[in-house]
Length: 128
Image (cartoon, rainbow, N blue to C red; front, side, top):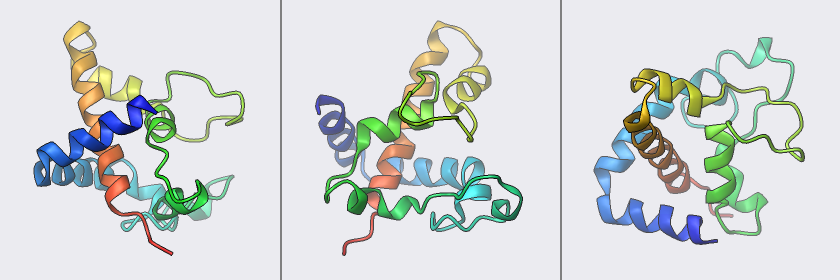
């Protein structure tokens, strides 16, 4: 609960630059599977073994509340979720850490990138 509030508050404080960075990271790293508009219809869906979720419906599937903590953990991927089953997507926490230099300072960059992605996904939720 605390993480969800912190993530959403952070996004509101930084506004459009966070959304722009999150969107850019989304398009670069996620859209091949999840689609340009996060509808689960990316160009790689035809070759994947599992259905790709529509990321615009995460709030609707969670009782109207965006599951920020869970989304953060799934993107990061370095913590195994037994309830999540097999992991079919990249472990972005490790990938971002390597890209940022694979040292102690890199962890802050990883957290920032994942927070940006979480805030971007929170901003595109469909209201039903």
